Image 1: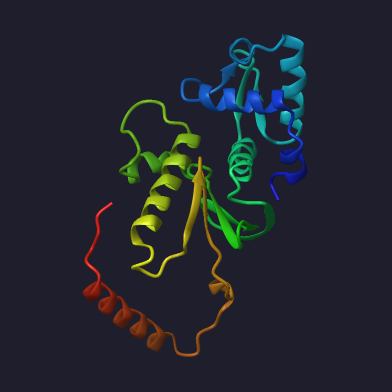
Image 2: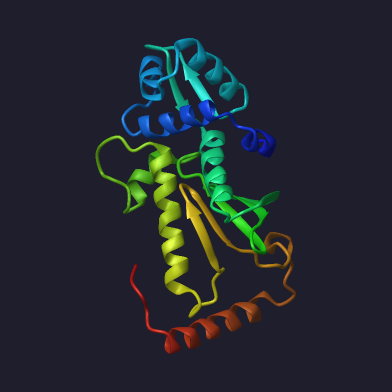
Length: 222
């Protein structure tokens, strides 16, 4: 796991304040200056330095000394803010093991009112340069850091789920915060571990069901 749940649970209020300050500051800065962090949080320089050192050690913040002392959120810090908010509002109460990972997301089991899955979007982790070109929801110009891209991707997925459910067979949308989408957990084997004896027949069946579904339900734009 790329983050420690125990650290999320025991996160100091000053450390959380710094994470939120960095989140807001990264809309303007690629690396937020130390002095700006101190001003925005209202903490002393020694307190800020101490808390930042802990956050860096925990993999939530990154430091860059050139051309000035600057700090930025990494995915561990953004995960922490999203999961803390989801736990605070009662959407989730426990986090389980990782059940899947792709180029632009990672999925964990979790517990809410029942078993759920949490998908953490990772837009730009490996292909940020292509995201600007290939995604219509990205601005053509200007600074758009990965956290904004990941949040927008999560918002669009949650909108799609809430638009389609229950008319179309999609996971139950449960909640969304920042780059995290919480949805109903679908039990079953991982498709990457399955072997179809007659793949052509399965594909033909899937196509027929899609045609029937499209005939019964009008297309929706979102």
